[in-house]
Image (tube, rainbow, N blue to C red; front, top):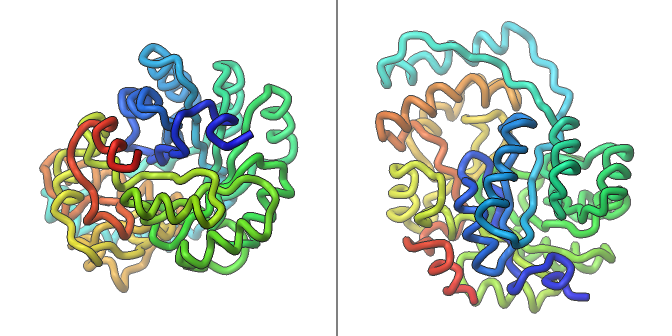
Amino acid sequence: MTMTEVLGIHHPIIQAPMAGVTTPGFVAASAEAGVLGSIGAGYISAEETRDFIRQVKERTDRPFAVNLFVPEAVEVEEARLQKAYETLQPIGEQLGMTSWDTPLSTSEFDAQIQVIIEEGVPICSFTFGLPDAASIQKLKEAGMLLIGTATTVEEAVLAERAGMDAVVAQGKEAGGHRGSFAGELQFIPLDELLPSIVEAIGIPVIAAGGIGNKGRMEWALQQGAQAVQIGTALLAAEESGAHSAYKEAILTAEEGSTVLTKAFSGKMARGIQNEFIRKMENAVIAPYPYQNDLTKTIRSEAAKQGKPEWMSCWAGEGVQMSTQGTVKEILQRFI
């Protein structure tokens, strides 16, 4: 069976599960266009995940996936957290904030897995690592198809060994957070990563990173990918939950305007270069998820004020190829 048959879709395309940007309408529009819609559930609670799933079901009867962030055990010294907070003070002041609350997030990963099983979601994907063996067994027993994320051959091999049914090969060009979880952080171009992973493992490979047009998609499929994952190209879609200032930044971005940074979240991610990133170049940054929690209110206030220079505008290297339109209209460029 081909990947499209396994996933129950018409075209070998997966809508990237962009946490914080995907809305029920966006996911359903992707599914209705014949690709695999994906809920980015990394930042929401178990009950919010349930509500999101049900809202998508109300809009489409086609298959869709839920993407979860695998929690990491990270410890941080109080002094470093305080220093990271103090470093952000001048940026907060630029937005008229003298101080702000920084409630630390907690992962509801196990409860989310239970919700996904109860709601009968057919596909679950993972970023930032692999679930433990018990969780994988539980999901498999529920008949779910599981997709891992790999930024290196080593991670792809680990995903296959763990029991993933497919793996996303995330090239360095991809927008948003790196899915890295094993060994040293590496930034391998998709041109090099994709064929290496295809050769190293026996499960289907999904290509991600800089897939901004039909030609690039066809190249990936010729290299042995069974599907491609598209994110940045869909960010400015009418159904996308991205803030209007974020969409404008996407549509006006030029080639070479993205950079890799830990400034917003403490984890390496690719986004459009802006004032926040420049100001934080040599700053003390707390590890993920603490930095993400520290900057959340700043990013939210910047969005309210319509100031993309202080927002995390995640985007891939092919951002200059992004266009306006509905999800269906944008996908027609690839189909």
